[in-house]
Length: 293
Image 1: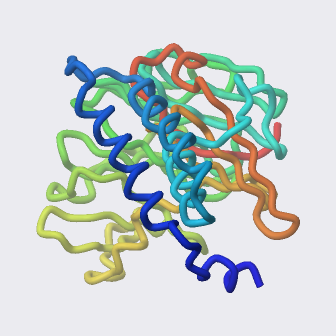
Image 2: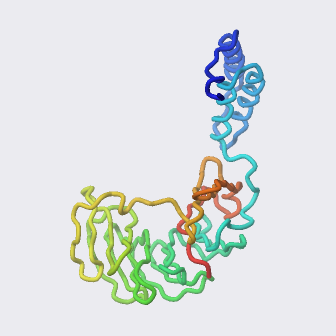
Image 3: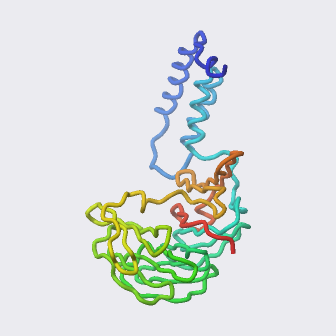
């Protein structure tokens, strides 16, 4: 019924749309030009004009407003990250460093690390500085360090008792034991992209090479298990809560974190002012949602 009604052409509707657009276009053309900056005020002014115009329009006009509203963020978002909608802890990377966010919303800055990832069961964090790989606790206590040039994309994988950390150093793929021992080179021609540990037995590692191919290695022996793997093995999946019930998406343009419940009933929770909460000039990134302590 709703769709049928929306398809009905109301007398004078087209002319009303044309007049409304002319008013908005003229108002936009007359505004004084200024240097671009991070602000929604110009958008808000246009939205206000559209609101006035949409009062005379049918459902298609209201659909325009819905699209504009969605483009600038989720309405009725919380002003701060008061809590997580599911158990576990978020690992967040900002200009100010790496942060751990507990389920109750409390935050702890781990230090000035540019990248980080959880260990398989959330007991530790692998983090990187420019020339150092660091293993530390979620409370910020450093367990060990390894000096290597230009460390990037540390990723911790394995079982509860037998783990490995894969990382890049000057573009080369390397691996080291979870205790900081046995560091060695796996491939000098890795691309500048985070490797990914594959589930299952053993230490299977997928990574991209500079020639555009994707390989899967046995990280213990260095044996190539697949020379033409699919790109999806190393591409990120959305960050999902440990219980599998919620997904979080970082929305940089709106400076929001958006939590969506998977399954029924459908729920959306959004948090605004994310950059300021992590003392970051640029929008932070989420590096994982791991196990409850």
